Figure 1 (cartoon, helix red, strand yellow):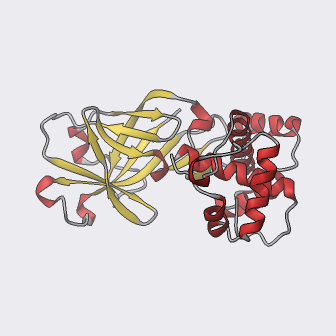
Figure 2: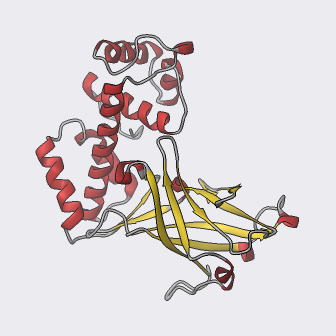
Length: 271
């Protein structure tokens, strides 16, 4: 859903937008009431409540839920993922055929997604896989729509920031295993990278939405949220690579903000 669209929407559009919204929040294990949705999406509270009642009648939302939070039924969950898949495929399609930005492509996809036929969407999906026009970058991608639940091992590299063409592997990359593991779960997607030294005294940070956050460390390695990456989407395959900005430094400097000399581009080869 895009707030920037200043076009009146039908009830059908609003209901599908709401289902897509609830599905996105559910994937992040975040549950809101109709009033909270109204505030976040700049709607009248009565309108949000009416949309919820309509979706309850249609069997997409549960009739009653704890503290008034909006909860999807099984049919609502399936409808929500369908709405999200349509939105993301159309966004990628518009980027691919025109080279437009993701933001502009999302604006155009936001209206068309409610009316496009299954046959047209199937053709677009085929074109995304086998067409040969523009490659494009995509942020905030939900990899669940691409892969479903599971774990996937992929090659990765750490690159110096100051050298871009050609890219230069960072010296510290030799301290890491050259493979990352993508884990896709219902409520979260993340990449795990692992240092060769199990007793290492380092911490890893990642950059997301203009802010630094420290990566959670587990026995498997350091967990980097998948939505902190930017994805390169190709004509040949759905997603070719993912890249993000990370910082690696000693535990003694854990509380400090990352400095430029700590930073590297991580690139994960997804194909």
